Amino acid sequence: MHHSYSLGVDVGSVSTNLVLVDENSEVACKLYLRTSGRPIEALTKGLSIIADRLRQGGRIVAAGTTGSGRQLASAMIGADVVKNEITAHAVAACRTVPDVRTIIEIGGQDSKIILLRNGIAYDFAMNTVCAAGTGSFLDRQAARLEIPIEEFGSYALRSRSPVRIAGRCAVFAESDMIHKQQTGHCLEDIIAGLCEAMVRNYLNNLAKGKKILEPVVFQGGVAANVGIVAAFERLLGMKVVIPEYYDVMGAYGAALLAREEVEKTGGETAFRGIENIPRDFAARSIECGGCSNMCEVIRIFSDGSLVAHWGDKCGKWGAVLPADHETA
Image (tube, one colour):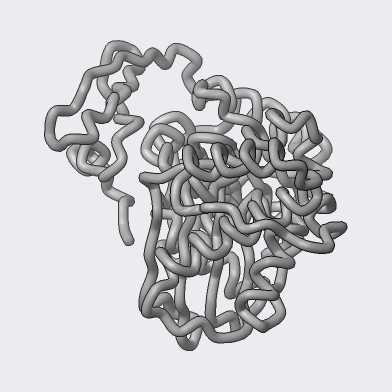
């Protein structure tokens, strides 16, 4: 049986995620790959795996991209829609939990909160500046403590008396953890304290002044950490829902939006076809002097032509590219 799939691609700083969504809007295939600072290679690898899946029968009839590298991904594959993460995550959450009111999303390098009413996002906040409370910070602490990240959360659940960790800054949190280790506290109590500190930091910053209503959906790679989930439920006093595809919800939303766009216009997909995707992408970098962040902006070229920018925090550089499909 030949299926018609929509492809969703979410290129982030930590992970590159791809999903194939079938005619019934169900996820038929998902990939969660580490970007490792090489988004072009990560996406190329993911597409080769998708190509193997398609040989079993199926074709791509729509493609959408999201994430901080969405313009890069669109330039590579030919996307029907290019959407920001807020929109993509909201669409995926509404598909999974139709009456969702609050989305908590914590990824490798940033975190978000999205508030919805009748399936429409009406308020959101993002933190892209501080590493405290993100997946990469948890990865670093797990490595420092020589604990597999997959087991990190379960340590927190075994705690009997969590210690208080200063969670407002990644540097202070790590120093506080080291101090607590030196004073003889067990790892379980320290890790539980870290999970609570991360959640407190999230609620005091991103969620400050916002009314969190149920159902609450937790998305992003950090949703796999049972210690963080337990801390959210304890501090919020409400149940937190973890979707089946929590780690690829951005890509899932992009795929759903792409199919909707192609069906609405009634035209052909802009997707190049995996066999037609150029392999000659090259990157060069410049330093943006527009503000004190001094972002390193990576410029992507194909056949000598500039096709995408990558790496700025504010999105200014992406906005100067021809991006006919870029919408909120």
